[in-house]
Length: 308
Image (cartoon, rainbow, N blue to C red):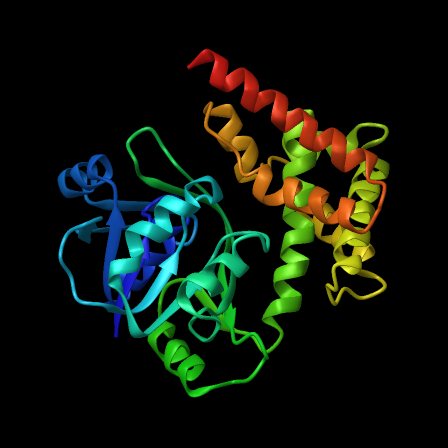
C-alpha cells in the first residue's frame, strides 16, 4: 500500500517517519523549501520513544505521481485550502483519506471534495514540534493515531490499515467510536489551547494559580454545552473526565497553539475556538470565557500581521 503524507512537520513528520521506519512505502508531499531541507539533512526524529533518521521519499505539489492508496492529512488548519488543492491530483477512485486535524470544521469540506465514503475519522495524541533545524522533537510518551469508519463498522479497509500500521514504533488504534473520540479530543484541545494561549504559560502554573481549576472547568463546560447542542455524543461526566485528563498532564505541557504563538506563527483559532463560537451563536448559547479566549487569539493575529 502506497501512503502519501501531506506535510512533514511535527505531526506528519513523526507518524509518517515511524511508518517509513517500519518499511511502509511513504511519500511526503511538502513545499520546495522543506524538500531541500529534508533532502539535505534527512528526516530526523528525536523522541523519548527512540530516535530515528531516514531519507524520505519527497514530492512537491504539481509533480507527476500515480494516485496513492492512503493520504494522511496533517497540515495546519490555516493551510487547509492550499493543502486540499495540492493533494487532489494524487487522490484516485480507491484512495482513502485520513485527516489528523483537530476539531470538525474541516470534515464537511473534505467529504464534499472527495466523497463522504473516502474520508475516515481520525485524530492523534502527540506533543511534538519542529526545532530550528527542521527536526521533529517529540517530548512525551504519547504518540497515538486513532482511525475508524464514521458509522463504527470494522470494515475490511480498516483491517487493512490496521495491518499496514502494525509493528510501527508508534500506536495506531482502530476505533469503533471514532466520531465520539474526535469530539472528546476537540473538547480537550480547545480548552488546553485556549487556557495556555490566554495565560501564555504551560498547564502546570495555570493549574496551580488560585483560579486555574475553576477557569478550566468553566471553559470545558462552555465548550461541552455547545458541542452537545450540535449533537456531540458526550457523556454526562464528560467535563469531569476532561478535568482528570488535564490534571494528568505534565507540569511543562504546552499546547501546539501556544508553541506556534511563541514562534510568531499563525494559529488555528478560527478552526477551533471560532468554529465553536459560530455553533454557539446558532444555538443561542452564552460562552463568555470562550469569547475571551478567542478575542485574545484574534488580538494576537492582528498584532502578528501588523508586524510583518
